[in-house]
Picture 1: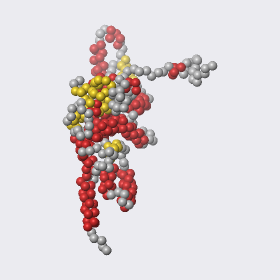
Picture 2 (picture 1 turned 180 degrees about the vertical axis):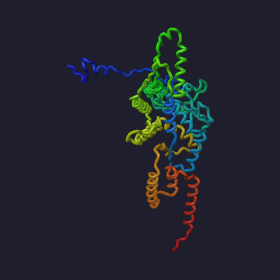
Picture 3 (picture 1 turned 60 degrees about the vertical axis):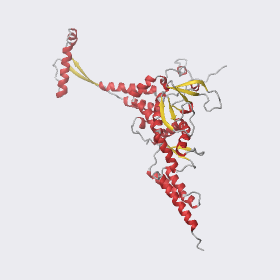
Picture 4 (picture 1 turned 90 degrees about the vertical axis):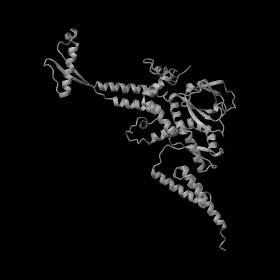
Length: 426
């Protein structure tokens, strides 16, 4: 005997209908570039989803840490990043990747594009390439021990230029299913998951706007209207109605024949507001953005909205780790060598949190930092230079310049040299 653990009704088929619901592979928005272009031009929500996420991913940038680099070295690295416009390029690249599913950034140096990108080369320019501009060439790399396993070693740009894979920095939005990744190295658009709910929200907003136009209807009852229409007096009837409306608009007095009747019908919109709010929340949920950020509306009810903002910041941090960190890991050795001549072994970086620290919290952090570092300095664990560098990197005193830290280091060297020359008092 086989027993199925399912609740169904033989009379109404309740339960069986739900079992028949299936998810099937249908229309893929990412593959329809014309539709994505139309959404970008006509839908402000799509623009905000793509632009806002990309802007927040690069807005606070990152903090670089290394025991082999001082503040002056870090400023040189930041100067190189500004020179090649790294921040602006990554922001635009993330925005277009969010819309189209993926883009590639071409790294140009003084060497040929077929030569691998290595430390010691000087980055001259970063160019964002759309998907149609990049085509794979040759066979897929099947060496499981190679870093480029499963991908192509050479790509063709604009159908003319051969480029080594290390010079193309791919930024993909949403990963495709594992089976599709074998034949397609581009990702899915961020709009893919929000497309259906976005269409329903736009349709409801449009219909609601049309209903507002019809919220008040003037009804005129005219004796013999049917006969006049049959006799071909449509223009005369329309002219009479226009004259009546003009009189009403200018004097707020309605003047009609005593044999005619006038009535006014008004529509009510009970429940439409709640329905719009639910559809709006569905769009925000599909876009993984709080309503306060996506639609710019304040939080209603007892909730402050801080938890939603915190969750959004955590999701942005996840996007930074997934989409930006691989790009930095390829560029950092080249940028560091350009700036200071070497790439430190203990190099690492962290993205600056988007959560703003309030002034009271900052004061408390500074007091705690001062007490801790004072004890460490008295015990000889830290020096004043190390504390100054930490203050600059942590942002507690971001106005400390590299020149001031260098002067402090020179002053400490002078004091130590003078102390060594002093004779003992004995």
